[in-house]
Length: 471
Ligand SMILES: [Fe+2]
Image (cartoon, rainbow, N blue to C red; front, top):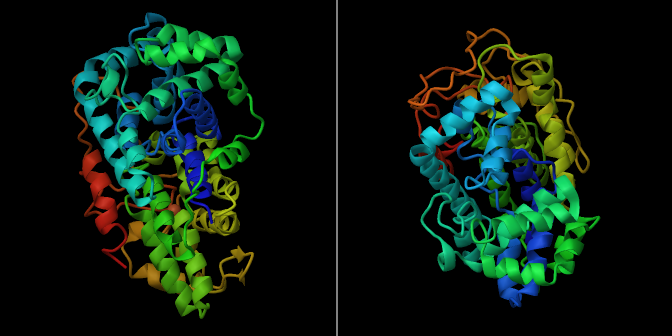
């Protein structure tokens, strides 16, 4: 299978985790490749641009907990942050609009107050996650390096603020232009796309690159309006096209799992833990090795759709509204939809979605008394792991198994006292008290890990220990 198919699925997950509709990453990739070709980059250079632009948001979940804490809705915050131009008063005046007029003004003040201290922390955590995940995914080393610069700016006022001007890689400079062109085009068509290039030339963008694009904009405009961005991305990848041996699929699925689990400080290692439990249960249920491996991979992927829901919802200990509960209930659907778009993972999508749906229903593992989980694998048929999963989950740490020891909490009812929406305080230090919390209403914190770790510590924790402590 082609590596690019897997990366495309991951791009869709990062779209959700950045507050955008699916395909924003794919469209950015198509536009970036068009600019790269216009600039005369060779195939190796184009490949770096392609991978960088496709996975621009690979670190999108690394600071989600802190963003939710500071700004109430990490998805709305990230969406606004992507289009924010601090040097443009009009752009800055729109920032925070998701929270309403009065609250938005408070959020802008809070943003200014913490930008110099928290901003670099956010940039470092995101870059570290991108670097780690990108390396494990087999990206070109130049693409991994460029991922450090996705939020930098030509004028040096970006994040983490360590590169500027000619010090930015060509891939990063092309990405900056392509991404803003896509977002502007989605809001206002070709005129808006070209307008943002003109306004931000010399500020966010390399002015030489903007001059080149504006001199012959047809190829960019054509790229912005393609009907099937996934098909185009797969077509424009230059040879040689990297492939993934079947045996290496597990490590790629672990990258998906870690991206999803970083979404909340209370789910660190959750997907790997569920996968380990599911594999053991599959063995106890007498499944063949191949079916056990499919179950393990699907379990690694079962919460990819978690990125679609704001961390302020995942981490809120109080009761959720009906609309918020629906968002939680829909996240397995998004897991499946992200996976089925990529030919390489499409076969695992329905199983991952069904497993995720079943595990979040009323603490399925805890309550089910024998009998198969109503999970169906297109290849293996019904998966009879209900009772074995219940047995192995009972011996595991509770955060690893959806619902294993946690009172079922559809709608996140009443295990914890309601915590009010956090006030905006310029002097706020992110230091939440340790507490039990549910993730999808089913998972809980392993008391040894999670809430007390900073964002960079959480990123570093995952590859080394996640899911291995308790199974
Ligand atoms: Fe889960």
